[in-house]
Length: 290
Image 1 (tube, rainbow, N blue to C red):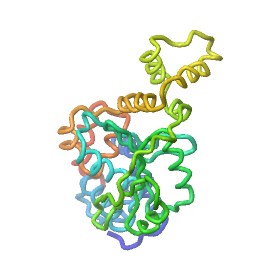
Image 2: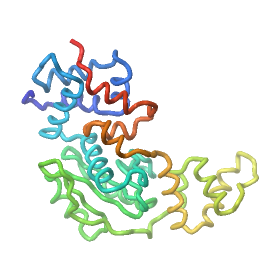
Image 3: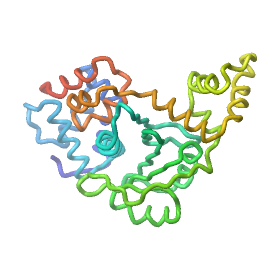
Image 4: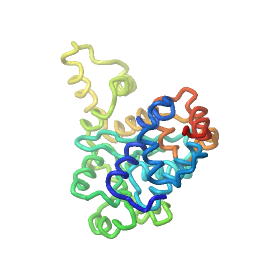
């Protein structure tokens, strides 16, 4: 592993550890140039690598010196979703738009919890605004930080109901402050904008047994008007049920057996689901070219 951790190579790692790039790398043998650049930078250069060997070494580099957002998200999925919940009855979302913010990670398991990630390279300039946005749609919010950022975020969130998880030197997430329920800021309009058309229509059917019969120009306005008559806590609960259906893993055992730890965030959120577990497994064990 190379000792340098300058900005350029780390940008390469950020480009590799994304869902779109891994999709291309696994499903198209012509899209591996950036990956090979990372391998040359951060591994010992052995020619007998499997792709799994190489990804494992790149992942260890991230753990040792550059814990980026993918690393945090993968840790949350493994440690807070897979290890603590039955994924057949739980769901997770990532980069969920909420007002002017995007929730890094959301876990739904009877209640909805937002996890806002702040790596050691992030600043906290928008955190207060992000938290305010999240509370308009979710009752529980946690901030996830590296151990170097803990004291800063502890002071910043003192007196609030926001929870804190800290990633230690060993890569384990530890709850240092338990999130408290806050339902006083829930907002009909914010929740409505999170939902897809078929989702809010299903909620209207549930409560009113019908949909507004108006022209397309007035339709969304009328839907919002009807939804404003639903108790906001009930509406938020309905939203959670809709979001929970967006991503569904039905076989937890197969998921954990087939998918290596390092790629579970990718495997959970990729849209290329058909035969993807087997494809990932085969890719992981294939020898690299050249």
